[in-house]
Length: 338
Ligand code: P6P
Image 1 (tube, rainbow, N blue to C red):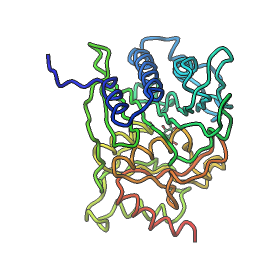
Image 2 (image 1 turned 90 degrees about the vertical axis):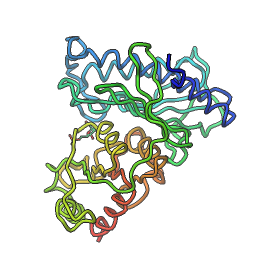
Image 3 (image 1 turned 135 degrees about the vertical axis):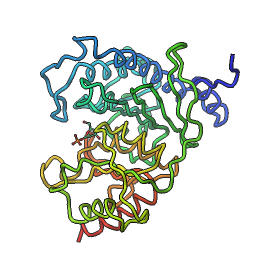
Image 4 (image 1 turned 120 degrees about the vertical axis):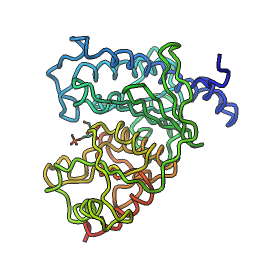
């Protein structure tokens, strides 16, 4: 038996001992791990389970058609967190309003935001999908959490992470002391340390964006993508294009290999005038992770983690990945504001 295996539970306990936590945050992470295992089990055979893959015919707050696995994952995360007495309020991409803690359960000191199953359009074509989560300390003293507890800037995050459901299920998280990745070993049903101390290369050679939006991008953005595709860039050779269409999958690849992901604002759809992706439960948690790994996350005009949120489901342009690549984009994006 290999005695160097470090389970995620052990890693969380080590972190708690090192930083003197009371165990509340650890309890939240442990429940997120449990929920991730439950969702992973369904995702792994979603192709076989007709009723999971079917469509509900309903749409969520984003106006996207809700598929049953979205609904299922949302309920799994809510039910895993609402009864433990560590959380005072939650928010989810799948819920219009904040998620109250049921009266019969105690309230706690933390706030959890999540996108329960990002990449919904890929669910029924067996492409990688993921869960994104962020955890804050509450700002109100007690009782039910309120909107002020949810609308906190990303630099106040206490911890954040994501789970990618793919050829293997990997959970990546940070509590502000570096980034570590854990792979789910289905033979023992545990997440074990597989990617210790993740650092994103300062510059990559991959760019990830939906070039179908090119006609609707602002001038500086278009010029940047043309620059990457030329031999004028610092590599003196075109970057490689990689785009899966699941934020978690595109982000995870670039985190490990280096590169830049861009979902800039576009002029086609008024809903995307400030970008498509959500600040609270998509951009902020991934920005926290990428900065902890030495990368950068920007709107093109400013640091994601510095944005003062105004709405639960507000959208932002998201430019995220290798630090030097994101900084270089920002020089081009200045033209967008001229
Ligand atoms: P588009 C998936 O629906 C998602 O929210 C993200 O996971 C992904 O990065 C983005 O939208 C893809 O959007 O417009 O390129 O299909």
